[in-house]
Amino acid sequence: MLILLGFIAILVSVFGGFMLAGGHLSVLFQPVEFIIIFGAGFGAFIASNNGKGIKATLATLPKLRRSTRYDKPTCMALMALLYEILSKARQEGIMALEADIESPGESELFARYPQLRDDPLVLDFILDYLRLMLSGNMDVAEIEALMDHEIETFEHEAEIPANSLAMVADGMPAFGIVAAVMGVVHALGTEGLEPDQLGPLIAHAMVGTFLGILVAYGFVAPLATRARHQVSEAIKLLQCVKVTMLAHLSGYAPQISVEFGRKALFSSERPSFEELDRQVRDVRGAARQERL
Image 1 (cartoon, rainbow, N blue to C red):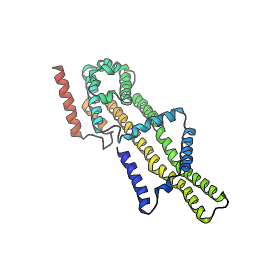
Image 2: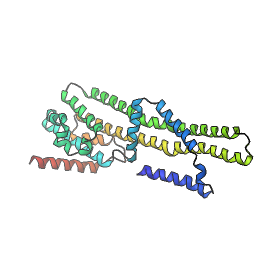
Image 3: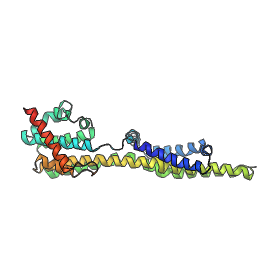
Image 4: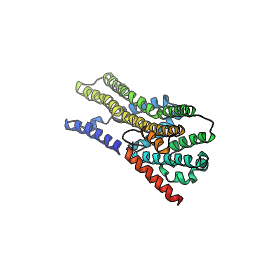
C-alpha cells in the first residue's frame, strides 16, 4: 500500500507541477521515446542476468507490495516457537523433537504457528539445524560457522533482484539521453524545417531525458531499495534463530536463549523484555494445560 501511495505522490507532484506551470500533458506523450527507453532498459536487464536472476526478479516484484515481510507479530510468534522447541528439548530430550522435525506439517507444535510453518525460509532453517542437533556430532563453533555460511549464501542470492533493479535504475537516465539525442539528430537532420517547426521537435526529444530520469529515480530505484529492505528483514530473522539456538547449545535456559535471540532483531520489530516475558508465560501456561 505504501509503495502505491509513494508512486501516486510522485505522479501528482511531477505532472501536477508541470500543469500548474502552464504545461500540457499531451506534449509529454511521445510513444517513440517510450519504446526506446523501456526497450533498452529491458534489453539491458536481460543481457545482464541469467535465467535464474530473471526468474528471481520477476518473482520478487509482486512481493514488494508488502511494506514489511516479517512484522512484529511474526517475530513474536518466532520467539514463542523457539521457546517451545527448546523447552521440549530440555525437558524431554532432543530426540523428543524427531517426529516434529520429520513431519512439521503434522506436528501440533508447528501447527500453532501457521505463518512460520508455511514459510519455507524460516522453517527449513530451523529444521535443518535441529536435525544437526539430533545427530549430536557437531559442536557449537561448527554449527555457528555453518549458519554463518548459509546466511551469507542466502544474502547473496536474495540480493540478485535488488541488484538487477538497481542496475536498470542506473541505466534509465542514460537511455533517456540516448532517446533525446536521437530525437535531436532527427530534428536537425530533417531538411526544410522552419525555426518554428524545429522547436517542437527538439522539445519532444527532451521528453526522453525527462522520462528516463523520472522512471529511474521515481519508480525503479525505490523498488530496488524496498527489495533490499525485505532481504535485510529476512536475514535478521535467520540471525535471531541462529543466536537463540547457539545460546541453547551453550547451555542457557530456553527463556534466556530467546532473550538472546530477541536482541538480534531490528528495533521496529523487536518485542520488549516485558512483551517477550508475557509471551513466554502464555506459552508455558498453554503447555501446562495441555499436559493436564
